[in-house]
Image 1: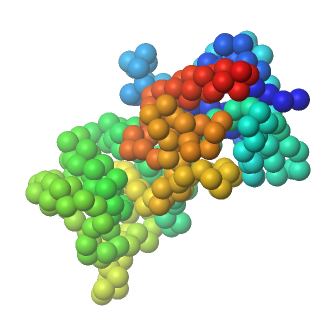
Image 2: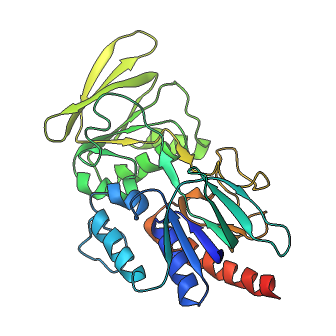
Length: 309
């Protein structure tokens, strides 16, 4: 079977794209190799998604997304796409799954997202969602009036430190080098913010606590000396790893491997679109992913009209 459209990834962007497509009457496959919901499944509480003024748990929002899509005739396929080939004019794209199967679709929307790079230190996974976070905008409000640590030296770490400094009592900004990689304007703001303490030339050795995070242990890379900092939360910004390796070679990626698109979510490969965290962009939130998914589906529908012509 040749589908009109295949959506790869069932996070907020993918579910939204599939919803818009199937409601427009095109045959749609939604391909996912895990549970639907994406990163929101690992988010304890979401307080900034419109329509839920009291907040909502990540898994509950994922269930609502699923419930909205479930009445429609979307073909759900459990697979991981390992490689994609763009179709010649008038020919469908070929999506090769790692189990050897091949899916054919006239339009493809990539919604496979990105994952946060881990530090790989003791306590990081143990306290994920219980003091270890990868999103200050998502979780910062839970630490209002408390002390927290931010780990990283790029723009994300600097920006999120400034954001947290408006909410929490104190921010310890931990970076393995003396100099930061982020833009000078953010560096200057961080250095001039009274409740941000710079902990430079230090690496995190361990995140510890009882039922939640209580301390972060760091080691000075110059002297070898150690320090234990009492904090209630640790925010990690050591990079993102997009799941874009399966896309056609002609897809233009930025230096970090994120997919470059135009404002309508079109990639440089005809018939391929991208939405959500896989895109090269600044804001990665549930609300922006939903908007991307709607825009990508709309662009895919326009492409399909031309494909049929």
